[in-house]
Length: 539
Image (cartoon, rainbow, N blue to C red; front, side):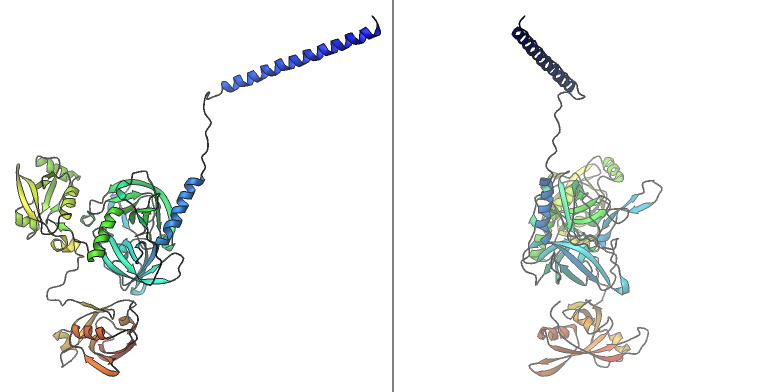
């Protein structure tokens, strides 16, 4: 074999070996790839689709946008009390047994406004201060809040987000039955009212946001869900008109009167109370539905008060064991068992008696007390409702004229402030005090020969009367002022005299009061005192 032939043969062998190696590599690679694929197909969850993490920005931005939108409408309300008020009916509590069932109890249901904890304001030195919240519902300066925020307050000051000033506010009207109040602030412009939602559309599980001033921290935003609807506190007759939205959005003392919002930034409730063993947040808060609040607000701005009808009965709570047993004993499973028929009331006049069971009103079945109350309170006072009553196994119809609830039950729904027999009614004057006529007995004690004088009964905090250092028990004998450049001294013989003087005064006028004062209440000595001041702007 020639040299050339040997070279050609060697090249052919080399090429063949290279080609074989390449083909072998392809085969091995294919087998390996197939093995890996088979291994993947034989994983713990064959055919499973990988999870995709959603973008978190969208939900986060929703909360942020709502906070920015609503915060300018939520205000801080600073409340001053001239003296410690009596325990208010709106501060009633519901008690429940301890977890260990050891016979102990807990303060469960709480109104909450005091930033220092509890439901009563601190009272250092006889004067107290507390904080609450409110929400602007009208650009004209009208604010919706809780009645227990403004109840017994001698002074209200409102602070807006981003504004260091505090603005004086006055109460337009209150409704203790729903624990709502409307206040008005002047001097603040460009107010932003909130958007009102529809609380009937709220569902359990919906997102909810609360904004307020818990513990004095303005514009605090918390979030949670709607935990329940139509929550009631059945052991308290004063709360029969309150059917709450329950939420786990964190709310604490100072949140009272602030808004509960849906994810469109609409107000769906007014934060009112919490259920707590400690007085602080434990995941159960209550807001009055905005549909109820709006109806109350509309009536207050129209008439200054809320009027509800009543047929003049007291009835047992429908789902209590004793009530259920009483209904069954009467031969029915549903209805309203009449516990008491106050004398002189509409039902007593119509012939209803204790032990009757109301099973229908105006031809519609009555399943519970709520059915009866909702129909009666929606009926104009003076109109008649037709009650179907079960008594001794027989059904009869009674026509009952609806009366004014505040007049029928003044202790419960009329504020509980009843004048003592023959006690003169106190008259409020713009000096910031209440005055009553001077009794003959006190005039003799003071050795006043001439008739006249009025006695100071109360002095409002931060008022002109307080500036003049007037005190309860002082007697005003005369008021001096200048009319058309001429000094005038007006003897005070009645409350009307004081009213006439103040009607002639204006801001900046000088006033001099001649009063009788006793430094020591146990002392029989009275001192003649002159007090002078300049009439301030209305506060």
